[in-house]
Amino acid sequence: MSQSVGIKDVARAAGVSVGTVSNVINRPDTVATETRARVQSAIDRLGYVRSESARQLRAGRSRIMGLLVLDMGNPFFVDVARGAERAARQAGLGVMVCNSAQNPGEEADYLSLFAEQRVRGVLLTPADATGRNIETFRRHGIPFVLVDRVAEGTTECSVSVDDVAGGALAVRHLVDAGHRSLAYVSGPPGLNQVRDRRTGALEALAEAGLGPDALRELPTDRLDVAAGRDAGARLLGLADRPTAVFCANDLLALGVLQAMYAAGVGVPDDLAIVGYDDIEFAAAAAVPLTSVRQPAVTMGAMAADLLLEETEAEGAVKPHEHRRVVLQPELVVRRSSLSAR
Image 1 (cartoon, helix red, strand yellow):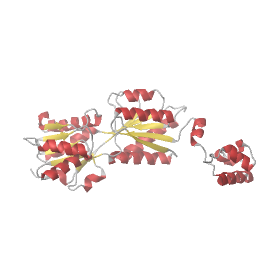
Image 2 (cartoon, one colour):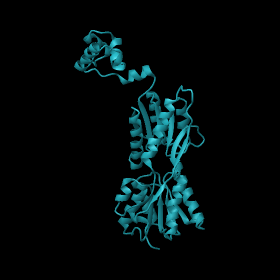
Image 3 (cartoon, rainbow, N blue to C red):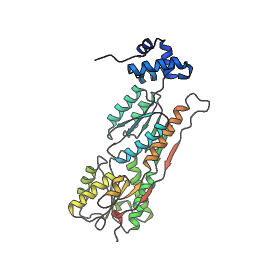
Image 4 (cartoon, helix red, strand yellow):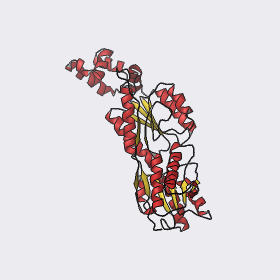
């Protein structure tokens, strides 16, 4: 296997100094046209590729932004990544996307990797409810922005959606349709988003004069379709089955829908279902799914912009001011919740 071509090889082939080659690569306007053409010819002939890691080491600034999300199997986070990548690309940066799988241990490992690589900054949807991973990462001095999570008790920027309002939208819709006995398929209780959506659901029930006992909670270990099917099976086993279910995300809702379909339970006539996120599959389901829409692409783009603002402000006269951006959700009504009661 041949050795990689270095800048010294290019200089030798072009008959110039290493400094001249460096100028051609980084400051071409400072080099005479004839010399620049000779160096470029040597670069093309030898197949020289600049070492980005070496350049970053000299410059002290990476061209990579880290993105760590809970589950890249969830289309919601794919959309967040699309938005972040779009904003990063406009700034000439790339995005390293990693998946914590809702596991605090994996989250800690990836944050350590980001620190080792000295990325420009990190967009983070935390999996660790204790906040210890964030505290450890903060010591490295690498800027980060929380995504889909309010920066409570921290000074960092965050971009999130008002999940309390979103939970209220979902349950208010079901109550207005005549439902008085509801279930909440909630996901892992350690996630703030899950708790906030439940808080909103209870607020909507209280507005209607209903107590918390009108909402039966069915927690799950994960936020995926399989967990939704399991919750659906438990729902079917209840003697006094609720007439409507609100799910903490669309993947759970699609799993519940599958369980109902397999058991011959009609949706929405026997059970109304509302999800959360409004992923693309929600509208394409066998029974189109009512869902609380989050502007995921916008969320990712805004988070990346905030991170870029912070990194560009390093050393500036006017320091970066951290901001908490809270976006508003929107209820998208489809057939899964349109039963007449």
